[in-house]
Image (cartoon, rainbow, N blue to C red; front, side, top):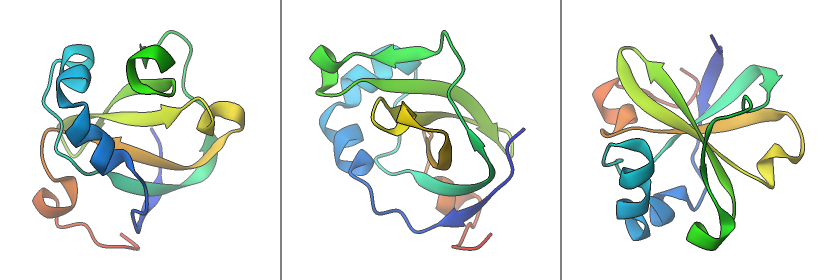
Length: 109
């Protein structure tokens, strides 16, 4: 279990999820909402070995897709290879719904 606070989302994952929707769907089995929730973790974290991958040739940069669940909603933590160079303090979670809207999340929650 990871504990974190919601922070403002300033990434390109929203655009990437839209542009590569069919790739994300083929890897995850779900159509992801074109937006993420950015979370500032209490304890730094690395993606576990053996997680789903989108390879650089498929997407432009390697990305780990780690299954997760927030309040019963299944989603994926998205971590690029560049992010994996060190332990994560901030992660992004994508799901088939707008997590911020469905869970009424605001920065600082």
